[in-house]
Image (tube, rainbow, N blue to C red; front, side, top):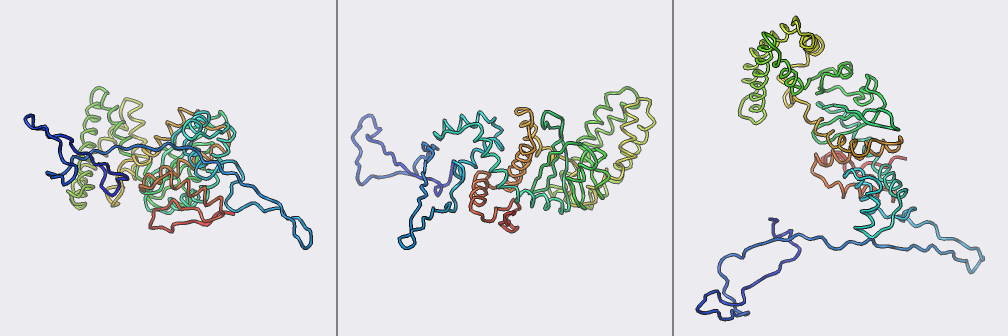
Length: 399
């Protein structure tokens, strides 16, 4: 039920006759005697929408003095193409935020708005949106690289029918994506730039080189411990205890996050738990089960210093759920589109993913933002920023 100030129209309904079976007289339409508050029922409806077609005629005029003819210059704010800023923005959103194919976008624009648009025009609108938001996306990328805490992850992608990788770097209010050909240390460096904060990731070694302080994801560790528990004998018993200790650690951390346990008390309680977990992992290194010994060695030798960072750093999460949630939309897009077929297409994907994820994290309207960005780009005005609203609201348009 929406508040009264959001209601566009109110229609009042009154009973026509008395409900008393022995009376049933017509009730007066003037001087009504109302009892209590009316029963409220709200119905949302959308108006019929049709594209508005405007024809711009640029005339040529002759000077009556010198007889020189002067053609009208292209009017400011008039698109060179055949589609206005809002239709261009909505077309880009259908493809970039709602994961529609080019043909589906063509059909829905025709069916909903009555506008004729070819497949090539759909792609042209996508590229117009991509160019419009590009400066804001670059600003967002610089922003996340300067934050104190960030989450990073990657997933496979397809570009020109070859395997590529989609990388994500997520903070509380800004999330950026990057498509690259490799899943390498150099690719991780391109994503992270000069990041000097605390990075939350899985155990992929590429992040280890570039992060000065790191927290590995305990959700991944919990799944590994579950697999260890399935083993027989002492290995299985140690795995079962690791699962139990991990569950206890998560319960304590959630209490710290919710404010029902102080951080100092959390640190005290974590000391014996930390010692026991490290003892069990050290025992696992010498296990006769190769996959268990390799896993335990990897955790202790390569990532031992990144297991407990969240205990000491306030506000840091022990999981990489923020990055994994951000990348789910991209995974669904990949499955339905089979990737991109050009570098321009990849730039469109990473920019639209960045716009959508960042604005959703801030509770801002994606439709309003993209429309404003296209209009600003068309008029040569500053492009809206993707940074939180406490940051400068606009960004100078790139040359």
